[in-house]
Image (cartoon, rainbow, N blue to C red):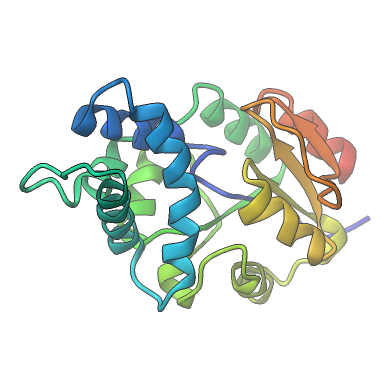
Length: 223
């Protein structure tokens, strides 16, 4: 087979610790006891906000936090409305992520990020990862949030990759694995939380983290 091999990644939850970043801020703002419950509800509210009229991801984070606090009878401390957006540049990468990405690059894979975020925020996360990406598509570029398909369509235009040479890697079934399946793409689900996929959502492979990803991708798309 010929042609570049491409691995596209979701960022938050896959490469960068999204739950740790948001959960840590919720704990700081509202205390340790309600933080797990608030984080679970945050997961439900954010896609609702994203599905409304397009707003920047910074504004999505702020609006979701305010709605979450309001419905739970809590008050966001004064001056802390943008706490999630302000904290995002400091969310750490998962420990194994940089090494896995470096190994993929060394094996000839080209790397892309397809993320529901803004340009300045993804740039900060890329600095956390410390690994270059060949293509980055964010919601701010296209005015759309996953699970809509526009990220993948924009990537396909930029990379001009044959579908059989492209694998999408992500932790979110809702935002990434399900739409990748709808598009007929090969996918690797990074199931960090030990979840069960619902009927009809079938990733090509499933891994608990990124340590075995280079070998898995090489098996899926030989050089």
